[in-house]
Image (cartoon, rainbow, N blue to C red):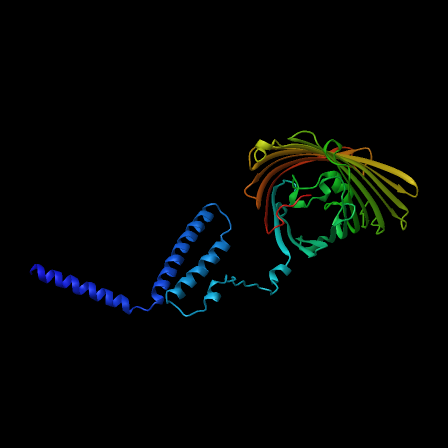
Length: 425
């Protein structure tokens, strides 16, 4: 191809390109410039969004503006025929709100606790060495913003018994709380605990002899008040007053009259790891049908050690309760004394060793005492299951003037499902 031919082709292409550009509409240049401007703005906003995300700041406004600019760029470039003003307006995100009532919120918290014991007792009938002692079902729920309820029913020895069933109002003016219904009464410390939550398999002898195997339970009204002492060196002080109806078995000759109870509890934190508690209980009841009047005075103490840096693995608790029970029949008084002392040491995260000594004056043989020594070893398999080995050495006065001694070994398994777990108070 000669030089003249190349010059001719270049000239033709140049003239053709000029002619084509002359055929473009006059708006093309302005649209091209607008698209370039919007593209540059989009690039700057994308850099801003990346910067805000890295600093964990709110990017909602920047993202809305970016979406509007993209829509405007698409319209300017001929990508759509949507209204530009509408495209530039920030789009509100759609929110879906479910206003239907969640039926699960109406259901109470349901828990079930099982308590089974195996015992080796040479003096017991062979069939009595396996004891399915209790299956407890508990219901707990908030009734409304002002009150809640707890109901505990136990299946034991072929019967269903309502152990507790009460409604309570907390957060009342003056630091008050009111309980109404059937409740375990605030006598000392352990009477308030449920059977499966005790540090041993049974309540101490003093509680069983004075109030029955299940402890003291009453139907009525309870008023709780936290004394505004300020805490710190002043301590924390709590006061219970209760008025209940209860068949007090032997001590009131099954009288079903109102009994009055008061309990004052005082608590101090002695150091970062040491806590001390002391309380006093007074109870009074009458049975005019048999001319019986009963009063009880009690003192309970507890000293706990739990170092914060080893709280999961080491702790030590010493507690004790002592009572004086006075019963008048036709104005003639008779007084019995009893109490217990116990200690529990945490060996590891799941293993606890404990021992309790009971000493109670016999109500059938005044001046003579029944005693028991109860060492135990408890292993918490998990939060829901614990296994316990316990040895009970006891002595009971007999009519002949001696003591009837007995020994038995107990293996206990307790498990729970639901939020109640192994609740203590």
